[in-house]
Amino acid sequence: MLQATNISYAHRRFTILEGINVEVNHGELLVIVGPNGAGKSTLLSVLANEMGKGSEPIIFKKKTFKDWDERELAHNKAKFSQSNSPDIPLSVKDVVMMGRYPYFNATPHQTDIDAVQAAMEETDVAPLAGREYNSLSGGEKQRVHLARVLAQLDNDVDNKLVFLDEPLNNLDVLHQHRILHTIKKFTQRGNTAVMVLHDLNLAAQFADTVMLLKKGRIVAHDVPGEVFTRETISQVYNFPCTICANPVNQNPLIIFGT
Image (tube, rainbow, N blue to C red; front, top):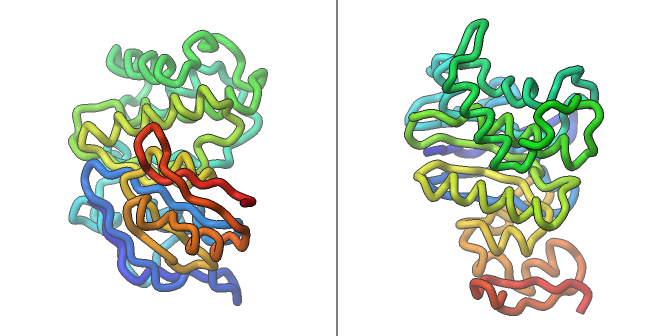
C-alpha cells in the first residue's frame, strides 16, 4: 500500500529524520509514537508527500506520487493536520463540504451532501452543522476537520489511505475513543491509516503495528507487544515504567512513574 526506503530529512544543519524505512500494508493501522522532537510529524508529512521532492520516492499503490493525477489522488489519499487555520468564516457544514471539493466544480451533488452528513454524524458534529466554525471550542473544531477528511474519502475507491497527525488533541475521553473506533473501522474495510499519537496506551490498544522514533531514527517497529517493553519505553522516554496486560485485549498497558 505504502512504501518508503531510506527516508532522511534535514532542516538547515539539523537532521530530523535519518534512514527511515516504512512499509504499510492494506488494512493496517500504523501508529507512530515517540518523545517530543522525535520527528513523528515530519515523517508523516514526508510520507504524505508534503515536504517537497526527496532523494527517495514514496510508493503509494505501486506508483510514485508524481505519477498520480491530482484529482484521482485526492480520491485515494487524505491527511489530517494538527494545525489548521483558526479563522474560517464558514458554517460547520461548509467546512466539512471542503472535503468534497475534488468531486464537483460548482454545486455539490447529492452524493456530496450525503457524504458530509455521514461524516458529521460519525464525528458527532451533526448538531453543530449550522453553527459558525469560529464559534466552536478547540475540540469541536478538531472534530469538524476530522469530518472533512472522512468526507473526502467517502467514495467507492478500494484501498484508501489516510494520514492523521495528532487527531486526538483537545478531545475528551469519549470522543478520543469514538474517533479511534472510526479509524479502526476504516482500516477493517481494507483501507490503511498512518497516525501520530502521544498516548502510548491508546496506541497499544488500537494499532496493528507501532513505529517508535527517537531523534529521527526508528527504535522499534512491530506489533504493540513487541515495541512496548519496559526496557525500551523507559530508555526512549527517560522515565521509568511498568508494563502489564490490558484487561480489554491483553495488549500492553503502560504505567509510568513506577
